[in-house]
Image (cartoon, rainbow, N blue to C red; front, side, top):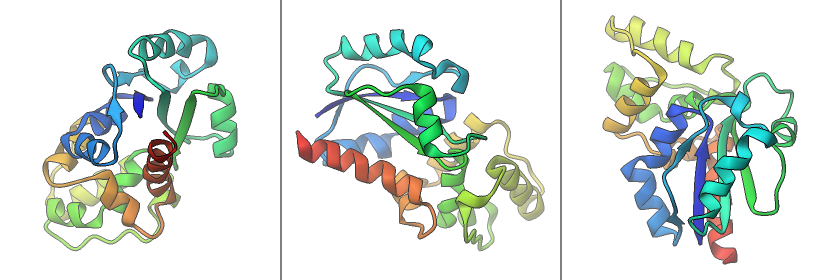
Length: 188
């Protein structure tokens, strides 16, 4: 199965390009094609703006295009998917509420980074997961975390994987993401 990936922003791009995720794809018979595209914000994930991105990935013979985006303030995953547009060769995965919720779900990596046991019962219910992580780091280490892409790189460096986030009992969007990719691979 050949899949082309589009991430809403730089953080998604970093995660999708990570060595751990690329290895996971290989283990599941998925061949990523083209470069992971950074859409540079949810405003660019609209049908008229996404068309050139789709064309680029389809030129690499992608069987399916997978878009990873945030729920942000949309009322539901369905609303987000409808806003982006639906195509037979496209799957939209929505991180609830934001991709940084997946970082909150990886309690082991957070605990390593903060040098303190960190447990977040419901990572996808946190309204501002990036702000939550900022406060966590400040209170536990006295240091900040920088930008969202800097946080993503740091989380990866210390062992974050989407698989770990998906294992959290209350992070269903990460679990759905991996399950959907496995389903696509097995259907081919």
